[in-house]
Image (cartoon, helix red, strand yellow):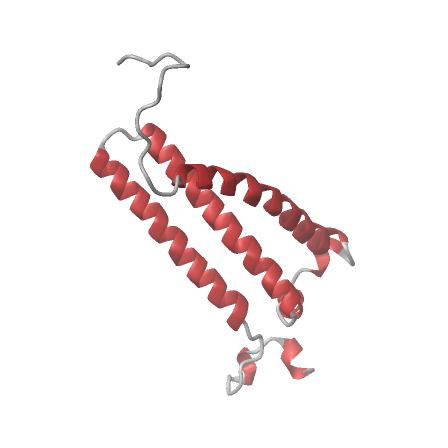
Amino acid sequence: MVIAEPRAPQTARRSGPNLEKWGWIYMRASGVLLVVLIFGHLFVNLLVGDGIHQIDFAFVAGKYATPFWQWWDFLMLWLALVHGANGMRTIVNDYVTGPRLRTALVWAIGLSAAFLIVLGTLVIFTFDPCPAGANPDLLPSLCATL
């Protein structure tokens, strides 16, 4: 394999969007946003109030009762899973030499990330600590006060 001179004329560039460039930009932007989201999450959950001792089912139910925390966790979930899946895709593309195995691994990464995103989104937006019609013996104690 011959490496071209740095100032050599470039071969014709294929048309269409440069997905690798946009993936690179996404990784930097999502990384900055994730730092803010994760440290905000840790600050509220571990330092405010009683710290780690306050975290229980009622704490999570109280957080998910407000749209602000639902959207905060939604954004954190989506950014983190897409960021991680894109990073894993890059590693697979760099180190897996067989084209069929590479394709299978990239698809497995994409499908697992999509599954976790759908499942996490459903949990965030459909979480109800006191579902109507549920057996009262199975409900948490906080439901008796609601």
